[in-house]
Image (cartoon, rainbow, N blue to C red; front, side, top):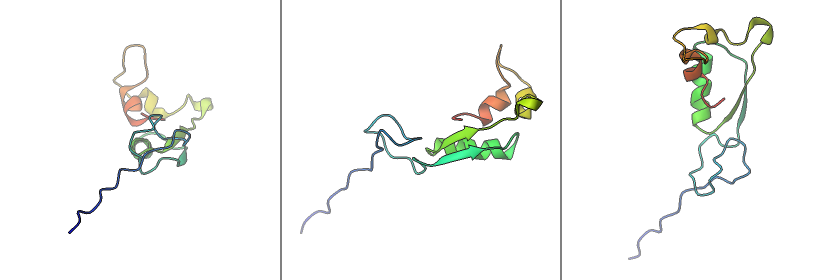
Length: 93
């Protein structure tokens, strides 16, 4: 009786947008997917931050005429930086 062979985990190619630059790192489910993010505040940024953590390349577009995402103005603020709310919802973008 032979033992089943174990298959190595898939790895990310180095040229895939949104993928890790480490050729030995595991391939994330959304590697190679590009998302254009037009949302602001609340649920939209929360959802796209999760998509970025799953390997998608998220490109956030903000309206400069109104000062960008309204989430930038929600306290508290890091010293000399954007709102912590904004930074937390827009990681990886």
